Image 1 (cartoon, rainbow, N blue to C red):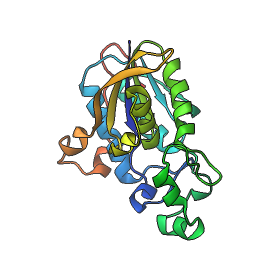
Image 2 (cartoon, helix red, strand yellow; image 1 turned 120 degrees about the horizontal axis):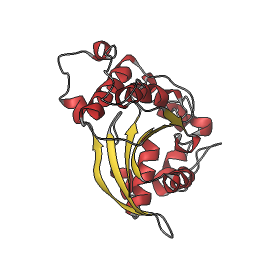
Image 3 (cartoon, rainbow, N blue to C red; image 1 turned 60 degrees about the horizontal axis):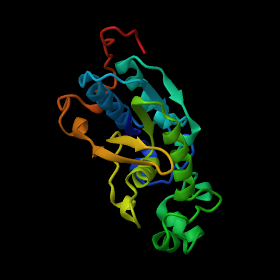
Length: 228
């Protein structure tokens, strides 16, 4: 059995602005750095044993994975298959700019959100193909995976066999934790969800600290493990 903890990266300035990031390398904002340390502390405090840590190779995921690596004593393995969707010509633009430059795009996505490609980029079906290949390749054990919102939604659709547009209804916030269990890989990828979009660490943990202050915390190494 394989349990996968899918963690969306922390907030970036572009997230806050509503700007399409796609696969552009946008770093975390100060708030996002704080969120990364909060989720790392949440994971460390579980005292669970994790067998591996994976991360998208984009900066916002790598920066989120860094304190998690330190907290659990595991090196992050970078994997391009769990990158965010390639938004092509939309990358760097705000919604009004997209509506002006690519009239009809949002209508097309609303009609067919799964297979409609971004101009010069990918569709969600393309993301799902990458994600399926990644999930099938995972060994048994409990895995931490730092990735992106679109990738998490694709994983939910794949593993739970969601029909229609049900996958769009999940709210995957920055540094949310989605725990999935892979029960079968072939001929069909199947499993179940333990939690989806869990952000309790943002709601309750270290409220007395600002995000800028919490980002400077350092974690002790867990018993029996060296520094990450």
